[in-house]
Image (cartoon, rainbow, N blue to C red):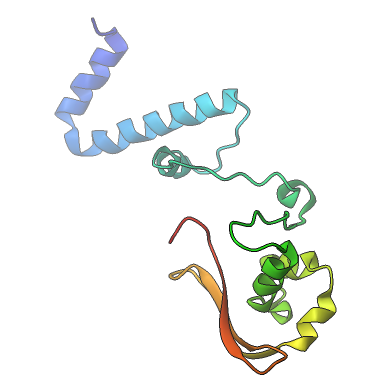
Length: 157
């Protein structure tokens, strides 16, 4: 059985179909924002609720980026390889400190021996591209061998 308010809204929507879809959508989003606010979540845009409804996995940053405005790099989890600093060195080579990008700065700062970067020659640097979701650099190692290093968003490959 429908409540009278719901029944009235239903008839209003039936009579004014084109305008009603947007009204029902806005009401639904507002109720979603109200529900989230009861869980102490801050909703700044109603459209964010709809976008979040399609999310399967949410990676949350609890390193102080939001509270301290400070981005830091955690210790990498290695699948292959033995030295986390080698992984960070590769990521640092695919970074560009001159751009003052927060992620580049965090990666380079995580490198224990930042002088190690001086042993490499950066031949070409491609900054972060939102389409490919990666940065890329062509570098030459101390022995003269050239290769490409990449730092990419995870889960996209």
